[in-house]
Every structure is written in C-alpha cells, then in structure tokens.
Length: 283
Image (cartoon, rainbow, N blue to C red; front, side, top):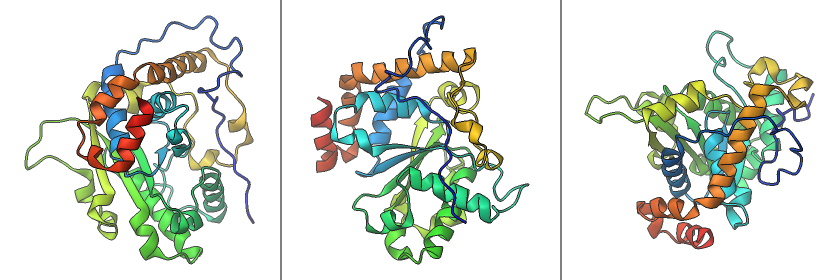
C-alpha cells in the first residue's frame, strides 16, 4: 500500500502573505548568532558541490531560512529543500522501520523531490545538511536510502556518486585525537571520501540550534508520520515567537548578501564556475 505525503505544516517565509496578524504581540527577535550564521550559511553553499540541498530535520532551520532570503530571486532559490524527519529512534531502541513506516518515509522524501529515480538520473548531487554529533541520523538516512535504491533497482554505483553529507559540527580545538564523526561510521566507506564534509560552528550557536532553539514545527519522529494533525498550523505563543525569529532570518538573508559573498569568495571552491555564477547572482 502506498501512502500520500504527510508533512508538518510550515509557513512560506519568503512570500509571507499568509501570516496575517500572527506576529502581533511577539517580541523583536534577538539574532545574537547572526555573524556565526552568515559564516555557516556561506560555507554550506560553497561546499554544496553545485547540488540540491536538503536540510534534514529541524536543527538547521535557521540556515535554511537565512539562505532562503539570501537566494530569493536567484536560480538557486529552488535548490533549497526541507526534509522533515527525526530518525533518532531508528536502529536503536525501536528497531528497524516496519513496512508502513518505510512507505510513509519514502512518500515524504518524494514530496521533497528525493527519489532513487531522480538520484540516478538527475544532473546534480543530493547534499544533506544537518547538525551532527555522532552521525546517527545520517547513518539511518543512508541506510533507508540504500534500501530504497535497491528496492527500485536503480544503479547503486551511479547513485553513490551523487550523495553528499555535510555535517554542522561543534567547533573545538583540533588535535590528532579530535573526534570526527565520519571516521567512526562504517557506512561512509561505501561512498567517495569527497562526499563527506563538515562546517564547524561556534559551541554556543551549535547548542542553541541543536537543543535550545524553539522550532516552528514539532519533532517529526516515526510515530508522528501518520498523524494528520502535523499538517495543521500551531498558533501558540511559543510557535509565533519562533515564527518571528524565522521571518527575521529570511529578511537578514536578503540584507546581508554582501557579507555572505565575502565568506564565500574565501572558500577554495570559489574557483569553480558554478559557485562564481551563484556569487554573481548574489551580487
């Protein structure tokens, strides 16, 4: 049995005509993390390999919102996708997905434009972006994609070269003993080494995005995938305050393109034509 997509409701913040009076009574958001966010967003774009960018779950929502504003009106505007899912309980205490959960997950991924057929035949790679600690979410996502590709009988040797995993990691002093999540993940040996990348983020900002920031949508774990209520907008005070912050980040993206470009041009990949083209549009 195939399932229709069931995704958490999220407002279109680039064209926010549906917001009405939702922001009335909210506090002006404190974007204390903006400088770090600009640096992070620029590196995500520069290290995306000219791909379709999929923001996994909710942790990197602020990067998605900022880039949505910055890239509005450019050819890159349609390259940003959200992939709502929480895979933390897969392969751990709840075990593998059952058939219905697998079908629902695949329906939701398809709604984001992500299918084995497109991966095999599309021109651009799929680049996944998420806050990473141990890499457990990426391991689960990779495993589900691998099984889906096999079920659809697509050419794995073709698809494996079109997958990219970009981790937003907590910035620490580097040393030979520094923990690097990809070095402890066996599945990363099945794809090219260049398919794994990282962007380090200030510890305070990392903690805020990963643990303390109020998100626009609830966590979308496997037990919620069949819940039709997730498609209903929440107008509670906490959500409206989160909405105010997200709207401000989209606007900050529009107003800080020059600062974004300044970081991008310092990246080694700026020598590549696709990134130069993106920067020309940002300018």
